[in-house]
Image (cartoon, rainbow, N blue to C red; front, side, top):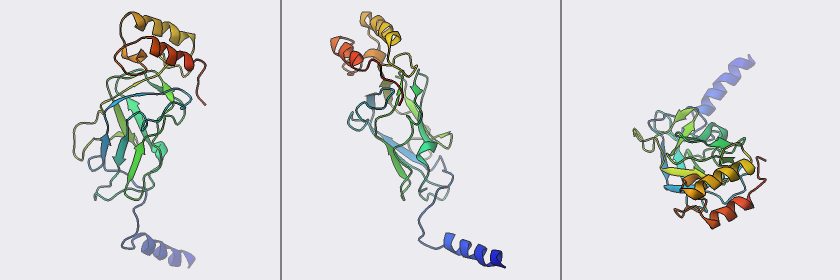
Amino acid sequence: MRILVVIPLLIVLSSTPGAPAHAGWPDYAASEIAVTSGAFFLVPSGSATSLEEQGVEIQLWLRDTNLGPIADYPAEDIWLEPAVGDLSWCSGGNIADAATAADGYTTFGRALAGGGWEESGLFVRAGGEILPQTPQGADHLLDLRVNSPDINGDLQVDLGDISLFAEDLASYHFRSDYDHDGQVNLSDITILASWIGDRCP
C-alpha cells in the first residue's frame, strides 16, 4: 500500500511544470563550449596562477535532447584532455570548477594540477564524450596550448626536467617557454627554478 502511495507522489514531483532541470545524460550535439584561445601554465600542485588570471577561460553549457539545461552534472564527470601531447594530471587536476548550474553552465577557470605540455589543443569530455564548440558543430578541438616546469610529465619538478629544459635553450621549444613570450631564456630559467620540488598534492 505504501508503494502505491509513494510512487505516484514521485511522479507528480518530477513532472511538475517549471521544476528545475536535474542531472541527466547530455546531448552532445545540443551542448556547446566557448573558449578564449591562448596558452596557459600549470604545475603539479595546482598552485600556479588560475586560468582566468592567465586570460584563459573555458565555458560550457550542457543540454539534453530537448535542448533543456542539465543542472547538477558532476564536475568530476567533465574534464580536459590533450589532443596529442604529453600532459599528465594529478587526481582531480583537470576537472571542471563546479557541477553545472541550473542553466547547465560551468567553467574551467581555476588553476589546474598537472605536468607535461600540449600545443595541438585540448578537448572537453562530459560523461566520456567529446563536446563540440557549437551545437551540431564539427569543431571539437579547443585552440589552447599548455606547458609546465614538469616537462616530462611525471608529476614532479626535478632534475629530469632541468635537463630537458637545457636542451630547449639551444633551440626554441614551446614546452619551456613558461612566460609565453616566444623565447626560452633567463626569465624561463627563473620560473623553472621557483617550482623545483613541486608535486601533486
